[in-house]
Length: 472
Picture 1 (tube, one colour):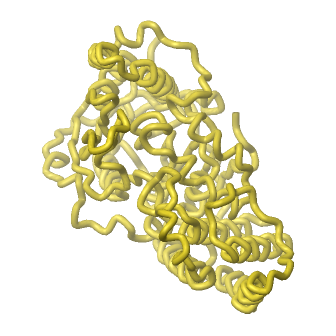
Picture 2 (cartoon, one colour):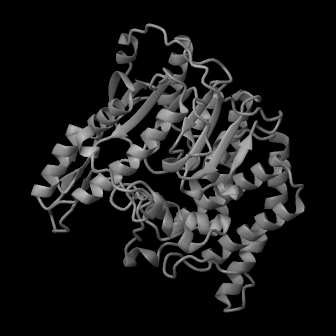
Picture 3 (tube, helix red, strand yellow):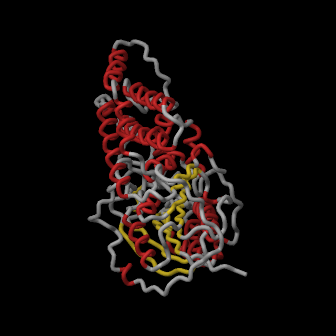
């Protein structure tokens, strides 16, 4: 269930770890009015969503950091949260919630089935010693440009290049750039072997691999404006001759600068825990151990909405040596994926009349009703486990987006609300926001007919709830 190789508990790299609190100690929620929250423009159109460590490496459907930042501040003002409390994010992604939790003086626990997301969350959320970063960077870059130039010259001379090619699919990378990426990978691996086995060193090596992952995607034939695996046109590939050294060093500089800024302002006494695991079955979490859940779940199954595994595939293979089949599994293991681990819930439609109506519409159109039901069956398992682990009466925040399937609108915010009501959550308010800047398709063609498209989504909903009260 948990991949120990990617399970990291970290109270940054300057202090000792603090164990997670557990037990049923619930707080009495204050009587709060919500007009202040409704006065906020939750779209944050003019805000810098790339500040601190949120910018250097993008990730599909990133949640603006201003959402968790504003809500953490709000719940600290209301007395629901105090410094040192525990935040849980069942769908970590790039670690937006984990980063903002630490900035707010909160401990965090993050889950994701995508190993690349786990690495990215740790790289973003865990502060590092700036002086050591400089030392390691200089060791990594010394002579690197000359070595990459030698690779290029040997390739042009048809001479042998001593590198082990990664398990990427043929036809997705130009040469000699793929060999140059491998040389950077090998340098990072050697640097790792030469460094002490300490969290700070592991964090620096991870940061270097994140910069290499970004470079990998930029160098490949991948169409960078999309989250699924689509290559640039054949006619454009002959002119695609990226400078690996320049891309890598520029990205490394941006990543290090962002981490230094973050380290200077992030509290150094917080714990950041990241687990590569499935939030549908999180038995390792104690009941009543979490003070707040704040998360942005997937919009739908990975195959037809945001293909996180496809997006992460080549960067994870090149930078971390992940296996090709392992990365292909990510989208299958996501909510509503092909690797089903749960029994169907025949009563799910009874608990959510909106879901029942939506599925009926899909069935009448011979649409993908089974796929929709699979997704919400999996999502319900996460809702159910959240109800178990959050302390009674504490805040739970779902940032959800609606979508369409087979031209049928899927009102995820209403379905989530109804399923949560069944589990005993108390709904306090819903906040709407536009998402004009997210890396998502505005249209798709479900029938694959030329010129026939279908509008997807341009808005999200922030659902503020309270965890179920304890039962006798």
